[in-house]
Length: 224
Image 1 (cartoon, rainbow, N blue to C red):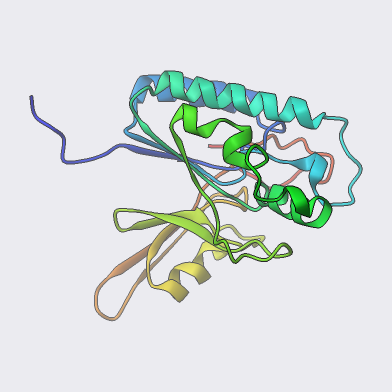
Image 2 (image 1 turned 120 degrees about the vertical axis):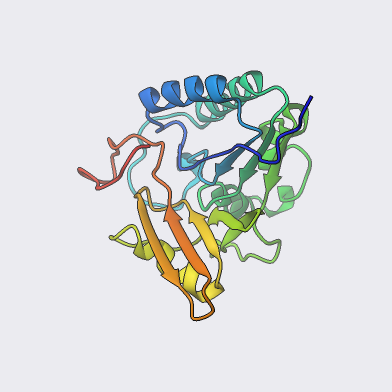
């Protein structure tokens, strides 16, 4: 039996559960079951953590417990569809809200077993890797967080732009690497050929969250 020289990697970001798009999620699950990728990367903001956000926008009424239970259920469905695949969850700025909330409001609990994202979502049992941002990240500032997939850097860069491609142009050119970015809810692409003939490619990935949000009207976001 021949072993493929290539891996199939699927990258999705910004589900922002419980504000995900249900139809997009259903289609995504069908896609996973059909394609059976070798590696699934949840590229930041899988959860929203709205109820513990410092954002002063009025809450939607969604219960925090229900948000967590919804996320757990979806993660279990991913693992059932991909029993042998590698699954990685990259910490985004919305997951960072948990770290920030604990340090600001319950410092004594920070770092204890059971109150981290990996523990709350039982990632060890599900065999899901959690790629946390740098341990020296301050409580007030999310830092760029990424992993490497071959020559491509996949992550949640702290860049937002009204024009999708510009959210990835600066980090790609500053770092001199090809990268795929979540975070902006927009789709965009940027390419540059360097003087030594290398091609840098930057991709801003579309989001998986609903366009119907309480804090924005008719957003210019794209679903996959």
